Length: 342
Ligand code: KG4
Ligand code: ZN
Image (cartoon, rainbow, N blue to C red; front, side, top):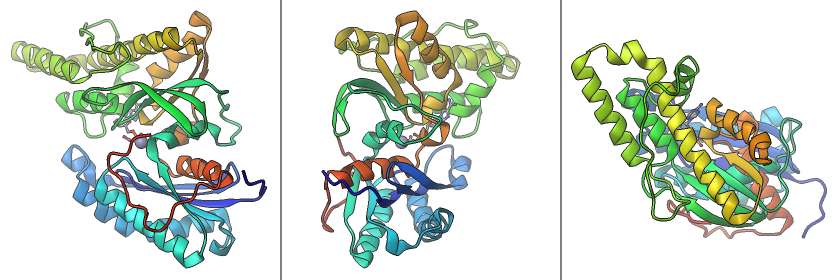
């Protein structure tokens, strides 16, 4: 393990539709720049071909902006970290090719990072607004592409003990929003309307899975679709008149499913330090029920700073930092991996 106490890492995240570049000094974030791609909202979801083109357009200016914001020269960098996978292949290729070229040009180490590991290790960014969980802990990683319960025993040892067998929880939010006529990504809008609605207005059944810690959301999406179609047949203004209650009921159902799985995971592992990660952990109801679980079940919960929950490069940088200390470097032949596992 290196003991270098001054390490600058430039990190690149390009797994989906956000081009992110961050610069870290040790475990502190100097800058965390994200260029969002507005283009996808008009298509109701991410269009992979357009995402990779936009990354290609964004990557150079975003790297330049990050260096400027951090106030450092590229010659001061000690390593380049990038998202190796999982994600959209075309998007990953832009970030990985750029990272390789930059590492080669500066003659510094290259570090490939697993995006899902990064969502979890975002908790280890040194920031006054968040607390680092102690090992071992459980992490509920909930995003537009993934839903997992992971047992973490050290920075590099992670075991998936439950995951979705079909849709991710973010997809459940986004697809429900689409049924209600809300634009993509609908998760934050469902959250907004839900805050004004009655969570018990409508009851949706919760799916069963073979492995009790696994998730399934495709049935819920279909149940919501059939329910809405039936109601709209009887009253064509049903959605407009009841939007807040529908959103609150969907959100309540999803957060109850997540909490039930977490309770089972705690029972199975005996671990009561619970973290959440991924874009969906921005959800207000999920944050609320998790906080309530501290008193109710004697858990200690770790909720990351909002900026580090969505796809961002700071989380790639923190994994880069730990890998740098451990001298886990990659050679320039490394390739992106769309379906990368831990
Ligand atoms: O982690 P993330 O930024 O990207 C992926 O790796 O997928 O997560 C994006 C997902 C989207 O599905 C979005 O609708 C959802 O996170 N999301 C939310 C909220 N904010 C973002 N879902 C529910 N409530 C929110 N407040
Ligand atoms: Zn993500």
